[in-house]
Amino acid sequence: MHVSTRALLAVWATVSFSAAALDAAAPAVLAVTLRRDSPWKAPAPEASQKLIEELKKDLPGDRFRIYPVGPWVVATDLPADEARGFVDSTLQIYAAKIQQQLFKTPRSSPVKVMLFADADSYTTWNVKLFGERPSTPFGYYSRARNAMVMNIGTGGGTLLHEMVHAMAEADWPGIPSWLNEGIGSLFEASTCMPSGKVFGVTNWRLRGLQKDLEAGTATKLADLLAMDTATFYGERSGANYATSRYLMQWLQVHGKFEAFYTGVRDREDHDAATVLRQVFEDKFSIAEIEKQLFAWVRTLKQP
Image (cartoon, rainbow, N blue to C red; front, side, top):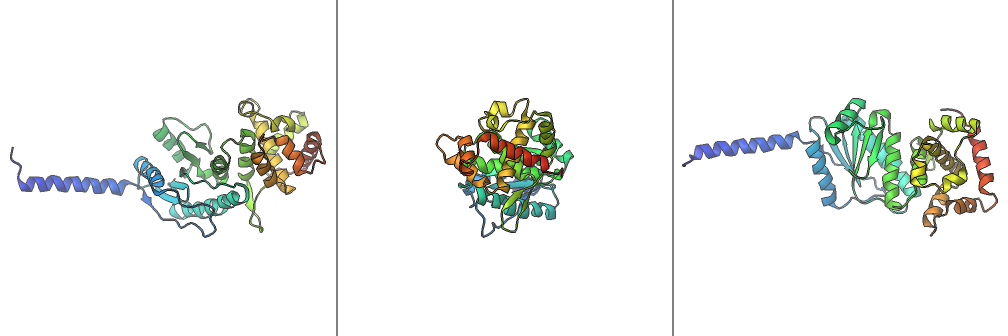
C-alpha cells in the first residue's frame, strides 16, 4: 500500500507531539549544589539516573519535583520553597552533620527519598505505587524498594530517623537493631548546637519510659545491650525503643555517645556491654550505669 509523504509527515508530527507531552508530564529534575563541607560525593551518574527515571515514570510532573542531593534522590509534591527548605536544612545541614560526627563511611549508593506533602498524598501514593496503605502515619525506610517514603507534613524528625538508618547501614551493615533504632530515635528530635553537632532533645518517647519506670517494667539495660532483632521488635518494642533512645541521649549528655557507637562497631565481638563500661573507664557495672541512666530519665520533663 502506498503512503503519501503528507500522511507520513502527519504521523511523524503526532509521534513527536506525544513524546514531547510525555516529557512534559515527567517531574522536573532541579539541580542542587552540594555544600562545600558536604560529607557526600555525587554517586555514580548511572546509578542516580536509574532512580531518577523510575521516579519520573511513577510520579506526575504537574505535582512533583526531583532534587538529587549526593546519595539522596528527593522527589516531593511540596511547594518549591518548602521543598528547598527540607533539602537545604534537613539534608544538607542536619543529616550531613550526623554523618560527619558519627559515621566513618559515607553512603555512596543513591536512595529515593519520597516526601509527600500531607497525610492524604502519603496514603494515596502508597496505594498507587505499592498497592497498600502504609502501616505508620509518619514514614518508613524500605530497603527492598530502596526508598524512604515519608509523610513530611508531620515534620522532618521521621525523615532524619530514616536517613540515619540509611547512613548506618553504609557505615556498619551488621549494626544491631537496638542500636540502629536508638540512634535513629535520638535524632528524630534534635537541635544543631553552636559547636556544629546535632544533639538529641527530649521527645514523646519519654512518657512511655517514665511510666515503665514507675511500673517497674522498663527494659533492663543488660538485656537491651544483647538483644536480637526479633526480641527488639517484639511485643515490648515500645519499651525497647524508649530505653535505647534515652540511653543514646544520656550518653550524648556525658560526651560518650560517639565513643560508644564506634567502640561497639569496631570491636571484633561487638560486645556492647564491655564497651559501655569502658567508655566510663570501667568505673561502673552495667547495673550501676542503668541506675544512673534511669535516675536521670526520671528528672526529665515532658516536651
